[in-house]
Amino acid sequence: MKFTIGHSELNDLSSILSKYSKQAGDGYGYLQINAKNGVATFKTSNESETVVTEYKVDKCYIGTVIVEADKFLKLAKTFYDLVVIEAKENLLELKSKGSKYRLPILNDVAFFCLQPLESDPLEINFSDNLQRIRHTIDNSGFSNIKQFYWFNDKYIVTTNGYTISELELDESTGIVALVSPSSFKDITNKIEVRANRTQIDMKFGTVYLMSRLNEGKIPDHRVLIPNYDNYLTVDRKLMILSLNRLSLLSSGDNYVKMFNDENNLVITTESDSGKAEEVIDCELNSKIDFKIGLNLDYIVQSFGQIKGNKIQIYFDKSEKPIVIKSPEKPELTFLIMPIVR
Image 1 (cartoon, rainbow, N blue to C red):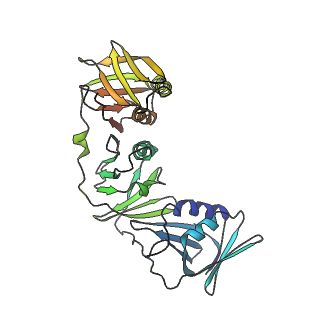
Image 2: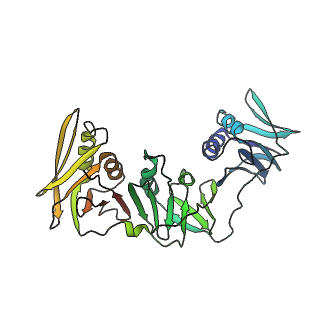
Image 3: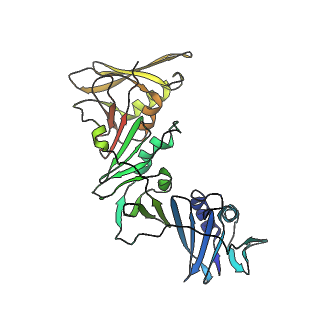
């Protein structure tokens, strides 16, 4: 096996594959490299995922080798010129200007990987919305909570147990599945997806990701998101600026009170550093007043993911969660649980 590959391609594959590789042993932590027909394929696995990247290469000679993933990937991202990768007896040589490294080829290891599904793919265009619902788990301080993405036909949902973020897709997928958050690390816009009862495959850019599905009952999250008639509308930019100022004086538990005073939304917080109050114009569409206690971090994170000029806060009684939407971006919904004191 032999081929020539650019340093930018090596850096790219190292950035992607290192997120899914693990310490070598028990069939995992290895990298399989295959060269054929001018394409180099790199494949690695952990217990739940197999990820594959492909790159067009020059001077390609057919062959397949297995090496320790961690060593190869760390080395791959250090080159700044074309790299010749060649199997020589029991060594894999990486050679660039003034540099030559040789890694052992592992001939007697078990290399476990998931096999791709063969059903027709479904194309999904997330736009940038997947990044916007991901904040629920990316910014969670609750490491003891098992976190998932879940497909529920037309919806993709994330939750950390205290907030729920929902993305409504343009069309039904027919997929009902619990998926580990790590499987969505690199997904941005369009993907091709296949799924069965035990596995989901996603292809995006140069990446082909196969992931085992998590066992467990898929909750009907639509039951958890209330359909309130009461709501108030505020300016998004003013709201975010006010919340960021409040965060400078919020207490350790980041508790804030929110309530309406006629057509004003009042937000207050109190700590050893002082007291703070923000008053923002709002349009109230309700026969009852708005009053609630919330975690400031959850509000800031959710409001920061919404696009558009306006934000609508749907509410009921003070012990009920609030639902946040944008009239200009209706496919995104965020639910935040109250703090009752």
